[in-house]
Structures are given as structure tokens and as C-alpha cells.
Image 1 (cartoon, protein in one colour):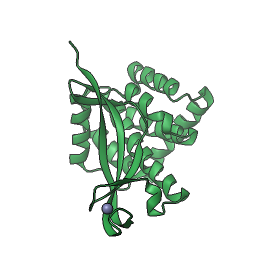
Image 2 (cartoon, rainbow, N blue to C red; image 1 turned 90 degrees about the vertical axis):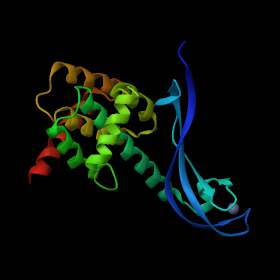
Image 3 (cartoon, rainbow, N blue to C red; image 1 turned 90 degrees about the horizontal axis):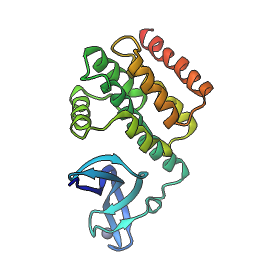
Image 4 (tube, protein in one colour; image 1 turned 180 degrees about the vertical axis):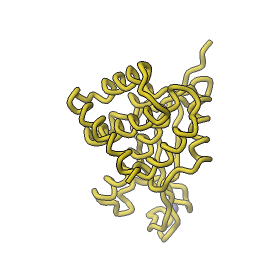
Amino acid sequence: MILIGTMNITRTRDRGDFHCPTCGGIREYLLKSRRPFLTLYFIPTVPIGGVEFFVRCSGCKSHWDPAILGVDGQAQKELQELAFGGEAFRSAVLVALASGPLDDNAVETLIRISPRLLPEPVSREELGGLCSSAEQNRITAANYVRSVCPGWSVDQRQYALQAMFVAATASGELDQAKLSLLTSLQRSLELTDEEFQTAIESAIEWDVDAAS
Ligand SMILES: [Zn+2]
């Protein structure tokens, strides 16, 4: 019997002080994100829904909409971009892992492109952690991208594809297996051939930037 279920994965994205209506005073809050995942034998595998943000009062543990922080449209957009960057980076890592464990070139390339997607460059340890969790949970690039990309804009899809292309070519030639993976990602991302081509051409500039 295969045990399939769902669970919410919750992460702390930010913290600070706010006025909690329940406590009636200034309290510490945690801004958290929550995302439902499909589990196999109680291990979360792929996300099955979008990211939701909420605020939790550290005093009374009440949950609030992020709007309570006076989070405006701009801040919401930044939160979405933060979530996108993390997802796009993870997608690139999964593409690199598709052809087996990462070699030195792949590790260096992923660390080098990480500041384009993450607030801070990823460390070797963090990258190693991402890889082993992907391997343990048997998460594939195709499944992961299919599940997260509905929350991405067309520009973000193209940008993410650039990162995935750079990751695919990090340890050498683009062989047939990687090419068919990229083609299936194009379908998941619902990009036209022209958008796909543009993204690949822009990806080549990522390396030029690094060399200069
Ligand atoms: Zn409270």
C-alpha cells in the first residue's frame, strides 16, 4: 500500500513588531509562508498549491492577514518575487541534478548564479542540503516546475528558464537528455517557441556577465 497524503510546509520569512488586536499591544510577529505539499510515506514531495503568507503573533499565536502590517501592494509584490527567486533557484538545481550528482563546475555555476535569484548567494552547505533533500524525496525538475510555475508571470517564467538553461549547461555539452528535459520544461512553462528561444539567447549572456 502506498501512503499518500498532504501536509503544509511552513517557513518564517520575516519578523518584527506589530500592534496585535488580540493582545491589545505591541508584540513580536513572525511573517510566515505556508504551502501544501503532497506526501509519500509522510515525506513531502511536490507542492500542490500556491504560497500563502500570514502573520503570527508571538504573544497570543493568533494568525492575521499580512495586510495587518500595513503591507501594501509593493511589499506584496516583493514577497512574491522572493518566493519566485527561491523556486526558480531550486528549479535550476533540479535541472543540474537531472544528469546525476553535481560536479565542481555545476556547484560553482549554481553558486555564481544564486545572487540573481536569492537575496544572498547560496553557500556550499545550503546547496548540498537542497540537493540531498531533492534526492531523498525524488523530486524531479519537471514535476517541481509544473507545480510551482502557475504562480509565475511570463517574464519570471523566461527568467527561470534562463537559470535552468545555465544550470543544464554547467557541466558541459547540452546532450539529448538535457535537451528533451528543457523542451518538456518549455511545455510546462507554457512558453512559445519564440519566448523559449529568447530565454535561451539571454541565458548565454549570463555567462558573458560572469566572465567580464
Ligand atoms: Zn497577540
